[in-house]
Image 1 (cartoon, helix red, strand yellow):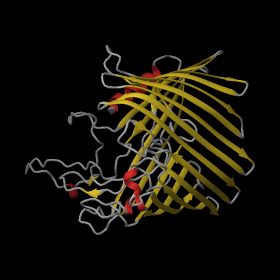
Image 2: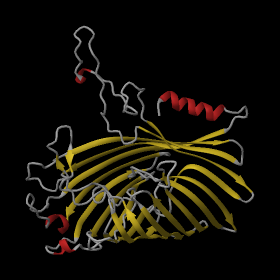
Image 3: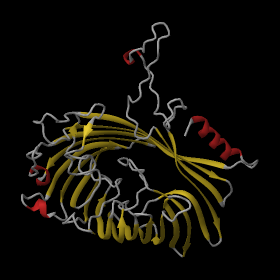
Image 4: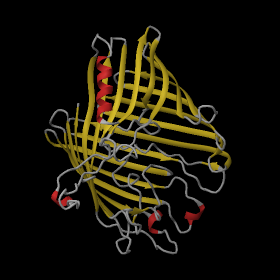
Length: 454
């Protein structure tokens, strides 16, 4: 979205009617810096990536236009989202010498260009979502591109957490209502649109219900999703139950998702039957000085990747456990291709929780008013070991130890710093092929985060 388009949109929303709407804003600006040595998991090879570091922007705005007490319009706007500090330095042509001025003598950073036309106006504003809602005696109706979030974010995650990078959305029409403390929602989604004159779309229908009180929240969501096309005809059913209970200083939260489907997938993979299960349980104790959590989870895996029975469940990519394991692809190598900074030719794990059993205890202790010390330990292994990985033993992903500080003593400000160590497990250490003989080197990393929210 170009600046003049954004201004036009805002002005049209605000002044389309003589009766001005009440406008409220939610949002945040976040700076997140990360440093790693080495995500290649081997310091002896020529392709070792070595020390890598970067700092990222992220701006998120949600203007809320309350036209009346029954009608409202919402939007999610993202700016410089994921743009790295120092990206797009701008030079200029000296009119006398007709030579570009070296960027070391300039201080002009420009945002990425929208679209392929380099002559277009520069901006990095994205209208990610927009939806309207109106309230009636029989419930609330919503329509538009809406954020999706359910439970702990294991299956559907709106991507607004401090480690999040993506965010789930759907073009949706929904109805919801509360009956004596029981909330109910029905929705119809268009997830993918093909040619408008052909039945090659992906659509979904969902029904959800939950009980909500000050201490107890619990509910379930059922979804049927169907994809149709020339090469794809697949039916996917998802059932997800989530709960969050707080009784005094003790808390228990959890989520269980089951996905089952059948049909034909892209690439000529026909007759597929899928069944995957993902679950998380978080036990916590919180006092004035200490907050402790024990988090455990499972995501099913597939013992045979060559057949048409799929058993792998993958958590939403914005469900993060640490800053290294299941957050950074590993191992990554330094690329020999000009203009390409890294290679994934040897990568064994990606940036999502999949085929895993994990345990993560975490303790946060208040040192001074507003200052907290944090320590966590993450251990993970495969839920299902593929036949090719049983000999040699390649069951363990390894361990991650995080230690850091966070500060929340100023209203609307969050600051944190984390140091992380990842020790590779046998899944990496016992890997062999014609080029590599195991990835055994530990990863040392860190993260700095500052967020202003409102």
